Image (cartoon, rainbow, N blue to C red; front, side, top):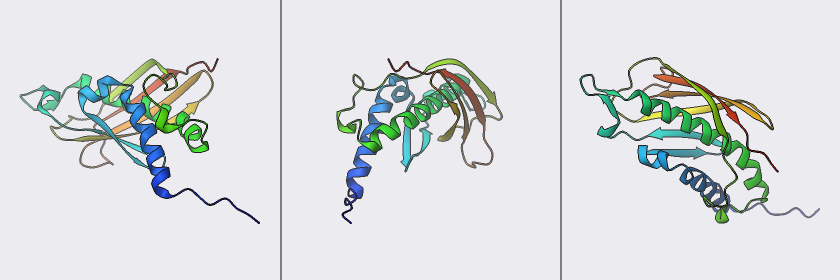
Length: 168
């Protein structure tokens, strides 16, 4: 029995990282806010790197509500597109090194996004994880939670509904 040798782990990691980099570069606002992503296998953690411009109320100080909402929506969108892209990249149907903002598949469009502000966002780094509840040909639903020091104490959560890009 001749089995094909698995790819070296460095090749697989490079392909996944290149796909994620191309995906994130497609959202300039994420770079503006300082949002980055850590990848462990197919799981993504969004990171909002703190800087003073993110403060909305300097008297508290607290993260701006719009920054929090944008962070949650970006985390949801990237997770949704990452799940769609993952199988294509892993199967080799898409060359991750050739991906760019011009060759990237179209992103889903936000239908609505609801944010629950659970507590004050403190002046420090924030993290978020999104979970795709449903993803069909036309519509997707994603839930995302953001925390700072303790994952079991989220400071905000959001639910979004997205129009999936047509495959035609």
